[in-house]
Length: 137
Image: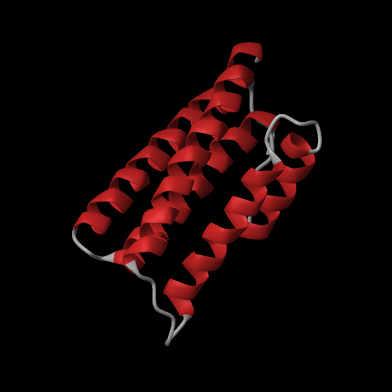
């Protein structure tokens, strides 16, 4: 995908807004004791924040694992993001997969609360890097 800088910025802004909306949804679902849906929305909030960052590099991976790979190569390896962020992303992905596809998986309040906390921290970290990059485009 070849985009001009202004288009990358616009798409990045759209994606970070979506991430924040999904995080709000995750919180609302948590309050309503809908822990599975809260975990799902927490993961997708982070996914969209990651996509908001990656598009600034011109990267638009089509798979969940592609996003992990691109974040690792373009942001963790040069130490713009922490290694912990990738580990946390993988935990959220695993939980999301469990709640979406596992017939016998159970998610309790503590798992959902942890997913919310991790998602909130990751979005802040991803957005911090995103804002730095936006200034240099």
